[in-house]
Amino acid sequence: LARAVSHPQAMGVEDHHGKLEVMLYNYGVQVARRPWMFIGLSIVLIGASASGLATFEEEIRPYNLWVPSGAISLDQVDYIAGTWPADGTLAMSVWVPKDGKALGADNLREMRTYDEQIRGIVVDGDAVVADKKDQDEPDEVYAPFAGSWAFDAGDHQSTSVKSRCATRGGRCDAQSILGAFGPDYDWAAVDDVKILRDLSAFNKAAEDELVPETGSRKAFDLHRVVAELTTTEAGDVTGGRALWLAYGVQQRGANFGGFEDAVNT
Image 1 (cartoon, rainbow, N blue to C red):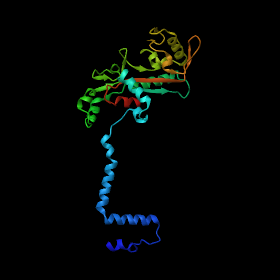
Image 2 (cartoon, rainbow, N blue to C red):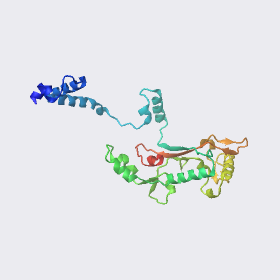
Image 3 (cartoon, helix red, strand yellow):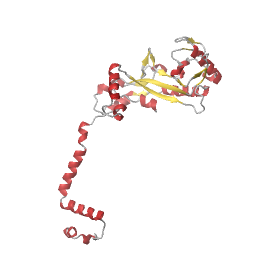
Image 4 (spheres, one colour):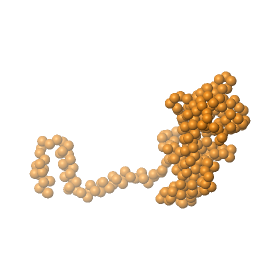
């Protein structure tokens, strides 16, 4: 080995080899002559590179991840959170039908089916709590989330299912065009013409007035849930470009996940 190090030609390294080969060869020679020095340098470099772990903090808030530090918008977010604290978030989607008929009977029936699927989700909170036990948070942080959870417990016959929804006026906060129709509305018998006629009656009604055509009270304006809503001067609804669908979900401080992930999926 000593002879090979002293005479590179013995290992087949010729003088006419390129500079890169010569550099790598000389580097290997130095490592072979001073192995402990290079081991020590490697440990020092790795330790220096990992020194930031001492100040590592987990951050899940997108505005802190993507907005530059010191931006005035971060101060405004902190002010709003401190002045008007919220215990919920929105799991939302926007529906843009390919046929352009956002208020078509088929599209609304499809949205209603999707809504029923969302409301049918039941999250096993016990499994979530068990998964969180491996984290550094104390058990009491996640203990309140044990049990079975759905968006609205009223949609389920089991009394053990608890609501995960944020409430507004004592009711689960769900915002969509479906709120214009009562629970007994006959979806199977409607067509595009009847849908527009019934929504026109809803649009013309006064706030909180019972609308017989839809079987519900007017609790919101259609412009809140229908993008580019078109109407006549008399208030008759003629169409819309897209639909807004959102579910208010409780946060309660800890990052429960589960239901929010299921809804967004």
